[in-house]
Image (cartoon, rainbow, N blue to C red):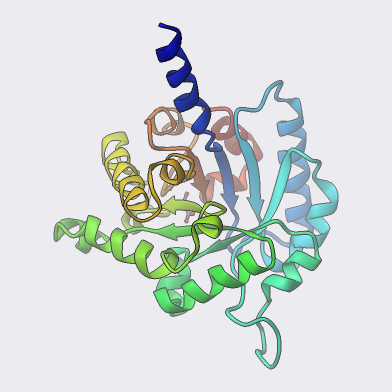
Length: 266
Ligand code: PGA
């Protein structure tokens, strides 16, 4: 009896993965509007008795430092992208070192809009992840299939390739600092959310893929977020799935009232 209780406890203690709700503001809000929204989110988060997740907001680059000043300890600020290179003649880019120097702790890497509109390939993203980690930033690494890939029955292949090419060059120690966001492209900004079952199925596959490379313990401790039309109405069902550890929220993160309902949907 005693022995099995002990073993059970060890197993339980080994699973420490964090729940996270992150708001991806994309290219929205003027500086003044962004500061206002950040203040509203911060006040709403402060008003929650006991938070069951970490809360992150990802405003545009320009807003990061000002917004960092208006949020308290319960809200972290993330960038939405970073450069592949450390410094130098790369007009228009922002390095991970610059983000770190401004006190920004996280960065979203590989969002489908970056992959689709700005040519961020797996190879480019693999470099960005290294830059982020080298500068002490937590990468929120996005993956997900398009509608035609899902309809073609290759969702698992696509996700597997994105993980392998984008993340599997990392040491186990570095990998354990990464958050993965599964965002089916057909669900992003479309109002068409993956069902709980569809999302859970891919999340479980992602965890299994991670276990195959880095082992069961690291896989169990990897936070895997769902993104794609996640909102105040469907978050609770999604977050109740065993392999879904929170969400990366686009549209619904632009309204503090909606965002806080998602933050408290565990
Ligand atoms: P959405 O965006 O919630 O507006 O679908 C999610 C995302 O792109 O991260």
